[in-house]
Length: 240
Length: 179
Image (cartoon, rainbow over all chains, first blue to last red; front, side, top):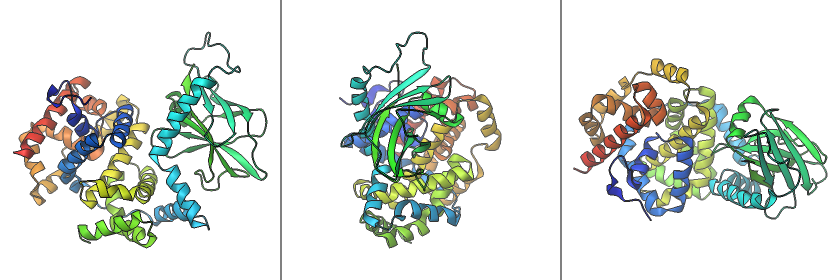
């Protein structure tokens, strides 16, 4: 299954791919694919480690620069803010776990295959690339939304399919792109449909097919700027 | 702090020992901030990245046990990879950005020379065996996380040419290091 390593520089090979990943020259998409492979394939992960070891002396050229104290304060707040330490830890672990997000994305793609047939959608007649759709669901949750990103109008339309928010709680919409932390797109207004305006910065990321997720937050939305409650629904944006 | 000390701190961090994590932060955050800043070239962005890097260190410290890397190299690898993913998500392949980078950061920089003089690491000898321009591309890619597309633009060659150059250079490096 592994690519032959003696393919030469033009053809590549696993060891060269590992080297390119470590060197840092690959595109965002390629890096995602390789990073997934590192998690799944221990032989390949060892090749990557080998290159990290080989090239690491170059890192001596990075200067030491004292970061401002605010970084540690924000870090502590993010990791340890809750008065109940255990759940806070578990949550931080879950939210920052790549495996979790990848699993989520995979599950969402599978769910989408089923949900894509749901009505709501106009037949994709004369709107090539203009619309992306995602079915937002999660295991162990009855919350479901159908999300449609309308690039022309810079908004995400949400159709509430099922699941109610608890009293004193709100649903908040997040965009997750690549390995970056979730970016809030705002609290989802109560109702069967909602429209959320997308910032210019988020537009491009959405157009490239980000993951949308809904978390349960205190009324008014997350106080920290990062999700604090459980993910109740999530899904991949796909063009239709 | 010796590498053994850093190793202990990482292992204790993997057991969710906050005191160890705090000490690890004090000992290593300046280096990792240097990494983020060099790759991202923006203070605010680098501060955000550093925070995320330490979230990863807190949650993934157990993975250190299965790595072949020295403790500081393992930490630098997390910071570098995170910063590179971040800039790859941010940067658009626009010519004006490349031009700005070109002006802002001629390579190889004086830092690389200091390292070459200060450390008798084999890799620097092996880099010296490459053609100057290619060695500069390897260093630029490693230290600043430049993509094939950006390197191709800066060196004025097609992307596939840059890819071939760097792959050949990597093969030569490996061969030289194993000599």
